[in-house]
Image (cartoon, rainbow over all chains, first blue to last red; front, side):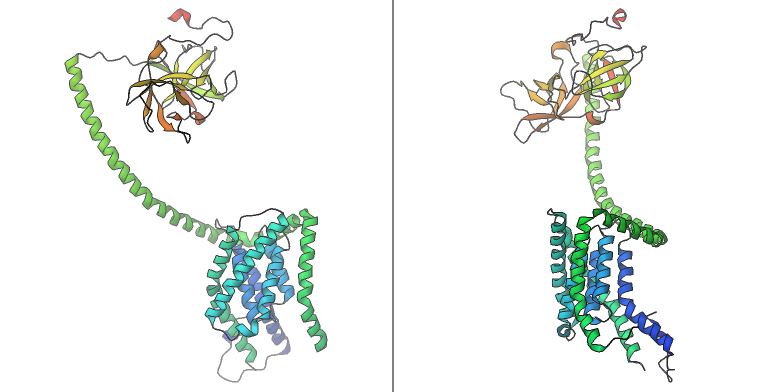
Amino acid sequence: MALSPFRRPDHGRPAPAPGLVRRIDAFARLAFPGFSTAFLMVLAAAPVSLPSPVFAVTLPCVAFWSLFRPGAMMPPVVFLLGLLMDLLTLAPLGSGVLVLLALHAAAVRFRRFFARQSFLAVWLAFCAAALGAACFYWALQSLLALRLSPIAPALHAALLSCGLYPAIALVLTRVHEAMRHAENAP
Amino acid sequence: MIRLSIPLRQALARLSLPLMIAAAFGIMLLGKADTLLAERLRTHLSDALSPIYAALAEPMGAVRSAIEEIRSLATLREENAQLREENERLRRWHATALALETENDMLRRQLNFLPEAAPAFVTAQVVADGGGTYARAVLLATGPQHSIRKGQVALDERGFVGRVTEVGNRSARVLLATDMNSRIPVTLESSRARAIMSGTNGARPRLAHWPEGVIPVDGERIVTSAEAGAFPAGLPVGIVRLSSQGVPEVELFARLDRLDVVRLFDYGLRGIIPPEAVARPEPRSGRR
């Protein structure tokens, strides 16, 4: 639905979109980040005999959309995504929510700075943020379960999400460009 | 879309993050207070998601089998190298065995050697572990038609297991070599020194009473000794292993933790027979 701008022919005079269609279009663009992230998380939670990459998949999506389209990745959406993450993984309720909200807040706070940086800089910053988020997540889990869990899985998840970021960002950048193109069109 | 005034909308946008963080803490408290809530929510979620996963089952199975395939390929290489090396070693052993066999034949021809008669044996199934007086003993199911008597030697397909200590009409109890009460006269194969292997109720019996001047070496083979006339000489028992404290222990060839069938050999030896726990006639006294 968000990819519909691709199908719009560039030549000729674009017909003015009718009110309802335009509104549906805008809503699709607004809803795409949240829904696509949720869908990706559900896919990542599929029971394959691999360590569950839900956390590692969620972080890049939330960070990307918070940085480049905070209008669509609003705090309530982040909240719901965090809740979904806590339910998909067996983490104590609330820990994932808080971690994602903290990541979102940091991304929104620095977004004006990062919008002007190169991809590499954003990636490095994301790596640092992912490491911090994983440590925070681990600390929250330990605190809520009242016992020290091993930190190695959290670090593995952080590394995995650092590695996944370029692949996810590549796809999401395409989608984001397409959306911007559609928005700028009359 | 609900139309709101711009300042109100800005205030809402600014307020939503702190509000959500507060809600996150609230959820944390809720999850802590009612642990069943999370479980219920998870169950509902997985109920809702199960159609998606069911649709994904086919491609996921493909992914999983591909991963398995890659993993097995990696191990295959390693295994192949290992097998090749082992094959090489076995080939050398095979050559050695053939040479020894011919040498043995030649020597026998010159000595007029009397071959030992193959001992008679009965194969019996292990039906129960433990129980009875001993900590490490097994119960065998036998029939009245089998001539089983006390003092017979039990072997599994790899080596020495223990000795028959009690015989009933349809069962026999074998005291395993690992039991605390088990004392087996053994020979250290390379030094030919005699020793006693005494059980500790652990997996590895200890060696004791070896003669002065001989030190059991790690990896040395242990066989039974004919001392005291309780066992025939040369039954394979195990390998010497030095424990972390340097105490020589015996790693048994027999897999005592997963015994299913043992063979009871009758060598006709009556050196040391366990005493009768209950006075009853020996079942097969008339046959011998």
